[in-house]
Length: 303
Ligand code: GLN
Image (cartoon, rainbow, N blue to C red; front, side, top):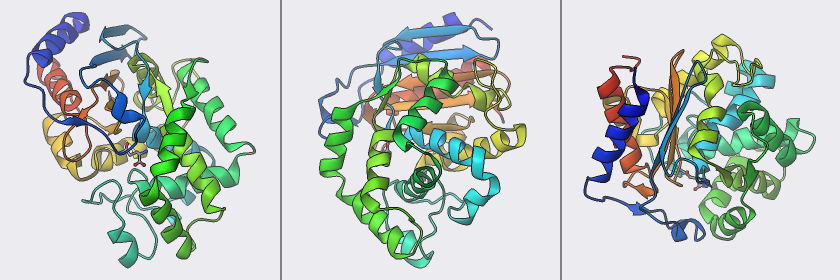
């Protein structure tokens, strides 16, 4: 497969499309990002790297981090994770509060904000220095020491994160947050502020494609655990657009409002895209389109 040529074609075809969508304004620091940025990086299971466009520029991975926090929680709590968070698609927006009321504080899945806050609470309970230890985990799985939180983004989100504060308090009222709400929110805002290039993001997600083994060969999760998290990304990774992503792209993946998407074809490749203009569901319009072109051109999708 000539990935270099395929990425070039995807890049050129995508660049010629009319611009659609807007950069997220929900976090003031993110509203400053240039909407025309566009990068793709693909890493094959044999460690070959192919990048194009702005694939070497750092961006805020936001909710893409939810796949990595749940992976870490799953690594030490295993199936116990699902006692406090479900594994069903929500069919609702990522920041919705409504289902919590009638589902007694058990979020539908770990990728909506409510679910990610419960996962954050698990990490706060189980890690000695939660923010430092999570960063260490990310550096370990990606093989990259140059990954950091963007403290300006974390602060900006903290100042405007009223809905997340509402969600965390609501969860606490059901007894599904064990730690101090402020501590859990602080952890969550930091995980969302992680900055990576498309290449670093693809490398971080490598273990999802490689039966649980990271790019540097370390077993992060078991084969079966990775199968489960990939299934969750497939059914819930794009909120109420997960069906659409599955229909068009046919790969498990996770999106974020920074405009990033990480997706993978088990035992074949990991791919990360970045384009900050979002559609009304909060997913990167051009990124989704680029991934649709990738699976169409290569014929490589899980379906
Ligand atoms: N930090 C953002 C929030 O909690 C993440 C949302 C997202 O990327 N979909 O609202």
